[in-house]
Length: 302
Image 1 (cartoon, one colour):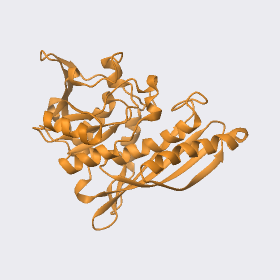
Image 2 (cartoon, helix red, strand yellow):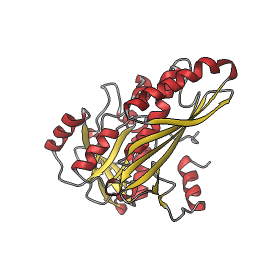
Image 3 (cartoon, one colour):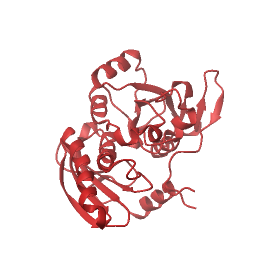
Image 4 (cartoon, one colour):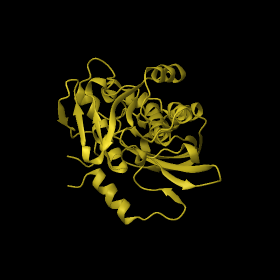
């Protein structure tokens, strides 16, 4: 059975990009030529009831907020600024009059916070609630960050804390790391970056493949969201929506303290990038190595 990554590889191979496309299928957003200083960022996220959220438990307003937040997180992963959104919603006919305003209200509240205009979309009747959110953004040519720029010797960092997002409800309330990504672009030069939507175990594989590199991760350095979170949960739960970023070597405690003071968000080095032949693995404090675990959220896995 094909995995989500297999399907994306097939799609990328069979869908060549045109001359105005800087980056097409395979990164957090598409990147298109725009003007002399900026690229246009374009992304979409699709959520389905029963898969990505549960009603009425999660609350329609929170679900609408999450729909936009997921796409804003993609813009953050490119180092960009979001500007406009399209929100397409499918709702059951008998529930449309109260569900749609709540969904839209949640998205609008987050849009105001980040200066994003909701400029259109579509509304249809459906058996279950489904939401497709498309966001446009921009990024300076000099500040664009792709998944494909990591090099051996780079530090491997994450913002915030990992694991337990679904059980704690954080997956509905997370703050897209727009500010954090912009600060990183101003202070240093991120070499590669992506958002952690499907779990570190799977998303690091995607970054390593895009950059043709390997990586070592130190499990004792991974910042757990709380004491009840295990290493497996931190690696595989998904829905963290933190940034996984490759930074130049040599950044230390002063950088971490300054970053937290400026953004209110922690940042932690959890490993380093290796040559591709080095592979992916975990290494504990004693130097003992373990194979990189399989896991994370795959929409097409059993």
